[in-house]
Length: 397
Length: 84
Image 1 (tube, rainbow over the protein chains, first blue to last red):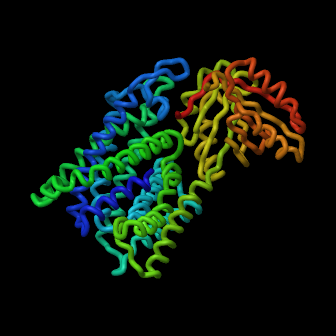
Image 2: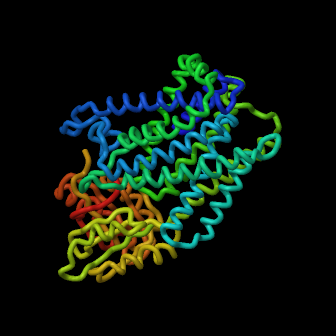
Image 3: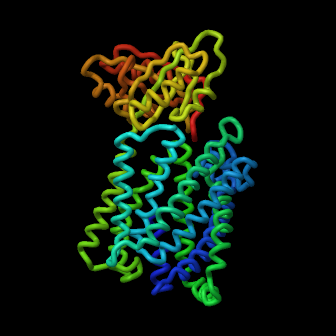
């Protein structure tokens, strides 16, 4: 979905506005973002319609996200997170359109993956922990990969690289952080903020943040171009909006489940698709998917770059260690479930009937971290009498 | 229909039988997670069933009939906190 969304943008820019400038890209971005908001509003309104699911009247959107009831204003706290997420997403989006005006899909997709490095750093800082060897390997691999993907016939473009390194990905990391905070916010026991309303509100705040500087940068010629190109580009913008909508809704739902870095690493499959989409697309629509250099050496470097990014993200995902902790508690101990679930790394906590009192499903980056970051915190919970840690060797779902 | 009751079945397996046991456990439709572990238990299965009657059927008729399982402990979940 993410690949298709970026591809729609690149094709729109290269077919209707070719040869493109940064201003053209911003003009397209301005139109595309507000078309996206209108499309999202209509989709969420449609998903708010009620019908019977499992014998109960529920919104159609329940099938997309079981937390969804109807289109609504979020409670104060998650709305504050969404405002912050939207502001950072606006900064990232502005950078994205600047880069999209200069690159092809095969470059834009890996550029966006640099966010994993920032999220990994954020995870490490939150845990006050030193990185493992595999984490350092992943960071190095992704950084080098992104650098190689960004090469052009004249060498590196320092301005583009700076945009990628700072506003594009740093703002994207903050966006992810606030999205995750919103998704984990419990409105009431068993009900969390739904990803459909999250997308609607964050997109509104994103568009306001993006539109203000973009409007100042667009000249009168640009506004005139907007009027001329709106209709020819409409179907591309709707395509981009719908694919972006579903990719982000699925992404937010995944964020509620796993760590930020790992969720992003899984979404990185879009990187691999960038090169074939660019090459095959240009075969059918020459120039429509971005300018392609005939320099074999340059393409070899780009392919190496994508491989390095992929190795980095898959190694990060593959290095996870899962454990199950079985807890017995002392007599007259109260409910420990909320305390246990609050421990970072605990994915689910179950209170059991029988000889074992609690079962925790735990995930961490290494066995050492399972001990230092999670087990020690579980041991400190008052009332815990014994813990059996079982390391998961293989898991079937 | 989504299961109403969640239970964990913790198992001790005869040496050399883990693969065969896991293959048979994977055939149980309501077993939505199977983990092969180190430590006190060798395999943990998470079941999501509609009733205690169904849990009884699966544990007694299906799981207990699998060769290689030495001992099982079934723990019914009273409350679970997890992300959606």
